[in-house]
Length: 145
Image 1: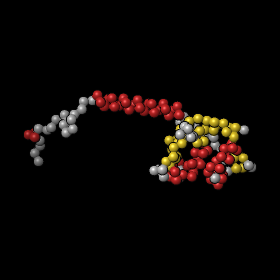
Image 2: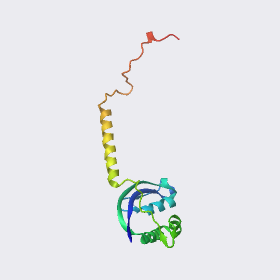
Image 3: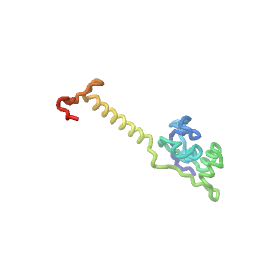
Image 4: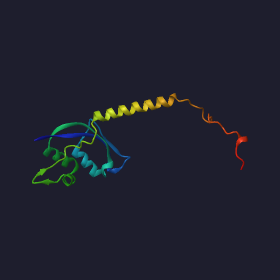
């Protein structure tokens, strides 16, 4: 029976190497269980990041397990999602990941705040480098040593 599963975009540090990164974007998303597999085989949570929900799709869980076994190997997948009486309990989602719309709204707010801060900065009077409007002390009024 088909179930709705979360589709995610993310960055993956291949083999845990942050200099060798794969991008799984909107056109090549991973399923939520697949993201868990990627974390396991590439070195942990911090090796798969900037995770955003880009959609959902109906999948047959037995077919999803078969696909994951084919791509990543039955040993890895079976270790993460053990079968009990021939049934696999695949996690379908993690609601803590932002949706694409939430991410885009946050990004728009960040850009607007940055523009506002830069405008304020640019309105402030600027002094040429090496010049200061701070008053220099009068040497005749300095305390004696």
